[in-house]
Length: 222
Image (cartoon, rainbow, N blue to C red; front, side):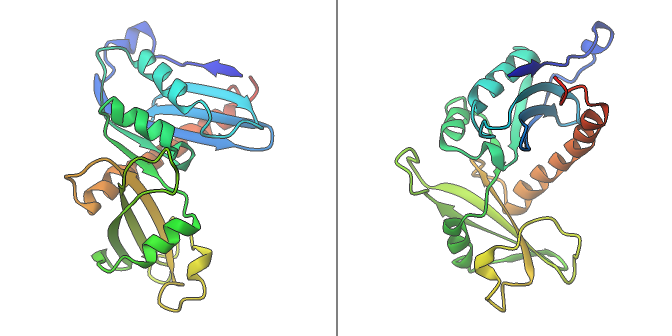
């Protein structure tokens, strides 16, 4: 495994914000399995580049612990935003033990699809965008309690470029087959579903940083 920890230079280090969101991202292909950490501004603070046969979520706790060390004891993490590679009981319970607020994307597995089908109340945010929520406890002995899930569905007719998945279970349901779905898990019990979604959306800004890293090849060639 190669570990790369970029940091700002001494000339700019003192100017780095001392509070913000920490964004965790997993990237995988047949040859590599990488974990990346960003600040909300897109600044890269930690990268692990590993063999492609390592699961994306493996080592998530150690990776995040090292990322916090890189940020320093004076940096306050407002919120941890993660892609679905970090959706696992060990990492989630670690964040809760540290009393860190998190929003993590959720793979839309058959049990999650069945929960979405049970959502009765959908709030319209804008044309073609609706949001709901549900509580769910995974069928896993390590999953000690129900947790809060927020689900967004976007009409593929009104928003053809919308992000999200079209679950296989929904394709045969006339009233569900025209949506792309996104699901997030969070321990934020006070924010509205819309606030949760809008807090998570800026995570897309890390795409530019990833493109820059891949374009330069200096991470993926380690």
